[in-house]
Length: 470
Ligand code: HEM
Image 1 (tube, helix red, strand yellow):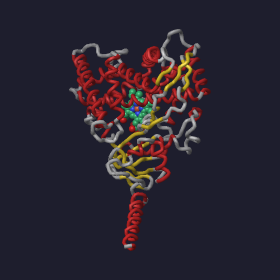
Image 2 (cartoon, rainbow, N blue to C red):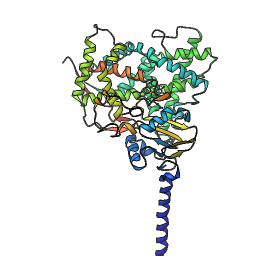
Image 3 (cartoon, helix red, strand yellow):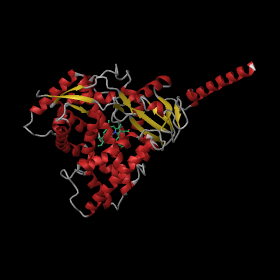
Image 4 (cartoon, helix red, strand yellow):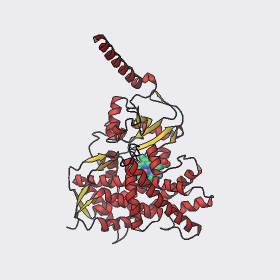
């Protein structure tokens, strides 16, 4: 009896050791790491704290690359500046890939970036977002921020920044991209859109009450509303009505015109899916950055004072009522360093995903074709090798440039975020208007941050506002 127990204990220990070795020995040629539970993989460890997930595994397995399983897929996580550079400069080895949950919830019917509908959409998108076009939007953004603050900030002593910055983001997007001016129509989109976003990185269990199920239902509502809008707009374009606004710079009208002229290149449903994905790219990224930026201004009075000085110099150089211009944005150098430091500590986009189009050899390992790949901004942003005392908020880090692959909130290479100028302008215009009007303090200095996997303040970041004139 005793011998049987001893034998089974020995066999168990032996099989654990063999299993661990298979997973972690470099000679296995696969990157070291664990794939966790069936289906769930290590998703439930990743979502509550992606920064910790990455740094723990870099310490445990390798600083260059490790394997895991996220969103139901085997995945290699490339780490450090070299890992980022490898992915960003070898685009032909990778295909576009998004987790199944994201594809289902966004309702993307096709993610082949070489297909004609994608090519057309991307071409129009890059045309719309390029700096030469974008810089004309600065005064429009300024007008919209002023209106937003007058309505939602000025009458109050206290605000919740996160929901307001998201609301503003969706309003601005609807105005500039979709040509929607009616605020009730925007609100009808905003509420289900918020639920949709919450499910993007959820566990894909489609049962009543789950986050995923709520997101799928919300996605149907958003798609119906957008479909109605696209159809209406298409009729206007076909009727050759005036379908452009803001000096001829409207996105949806231009895209529909190009699609119709090419023989209906992009179907209505495909277009709806792409618009939802485009809105997602702009929505939580800039909304979160504005929120953490406000938190930092409230927490660091010395930083706030320097930002205020820079912004007052700009405000005082203008005529009464004159709107901000692209030139003013270029003068906001210190303020931009503060935004950069905010995005270092809280990367708004986490990173990017790909699928391997071929076997790839990296760091002494082979990653097979078909595996999914993730690069994470946390693997460099929070590494003391690149950023000494990484937890400390210190905007002066950005007085000097960083080596390639180190600071990557927008990614880099051919798939770098094409909305980076839009984001920069919008965030700086918002910052300008807030600091010249208000002094900020946190209502609850200990308000906790949760990861979803994006970091969010549990109570939306409650900020007390004191007028600059008091
Ligand atoms: C602080 C704000 C933002 C950050 C940090 C950010 C970051 C990123 C990152 C990291 C990627 C993925 C790159 C990759 O996969 O390697 C990306 C992609 C993208 N972003 Fe942004 N983004 C921001 C705002 C915006 C805005 C405002 C827009 C649009 C108005 C936008 C549009 C896009 C698009 C369309 C893509 C896909 C690019 C492609 O695959 O070619 N982003 N962004």
